[in-house]
Length: 245
Image (cartoon, rainbow, N blue to C red; front, side, top):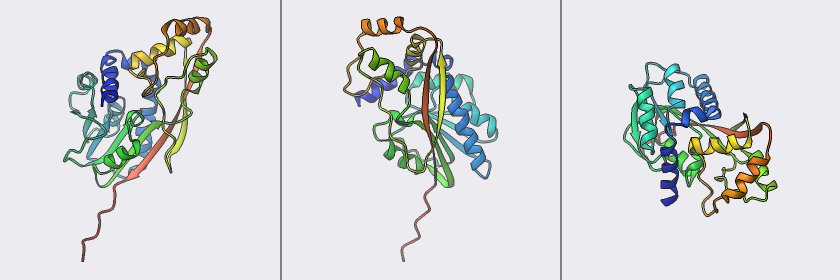
C-alpha cells in the first residue's frame, strides 16, 4: 500500500507540469483511441478512461465520440482536477484503478500508460473486463519490457544502478509498437520523469546517488533518444454464462 501511495503522490505533485512533459504519452493515447475507434463497430454510449491522469485519452475520446457519456478514473485528485478543468462535461471518479468495482458498466473502456504501475496487471485486466457492458470492449496500451533501454544503458555505463520502475513482459495476443522520443539532453529526459510524475523507483530499489547522477548527466552532450515499447491489448466482454438447467 505504501508503494501505491508513493506513486499516486508523485503523479499528484506533477499535475501542473504533466501535459508539457508527456508528448510520448499523448502519442500513445492518440494511437490507442484510433485503434479502438477502428475496431469498435458502433458508437459507444458510455466510455471509461482508467488511469486518466490529466486527460490525454479522455480528450481524444471526446473528439471521436462526442455524444458518449465519458467517465475518467484516477487515484490522484490533482490530476483529476486538471482533467475536469479542461473537460467540465466529463464525469470524474477518484478511485484505485486496481480495486475499482463500481456498479456502472461501459461500452468501451480505455487505459493508456497506467497498467504497469499496478501490482498485478493481469488481475487488473480481469477486473476491468468485468466493468464492460454486454458487447463492450477493453483497449489498453501499456509499456512493456524493452522500454527506455537507452536510459538503462546510460545509467549502467555511468556505474549507476538501474532504478526504473519495472515494466511487465508483453501480454498474450497483444500488438507491439515502438514510440521513440528525442530529448535535448539526458538531463532533459531525467527532468521529464520528474515533471511527469514517472520517477518513482522500483520497489526495494535504492535512490540514485544525486552527485553521481548529476556528474553523468553533465558529461553527456547532444540529444538523448529513448523508446517506449508499447503493447496494445484488446479484450471483449465475457460472454454471459447460460442459465443452469
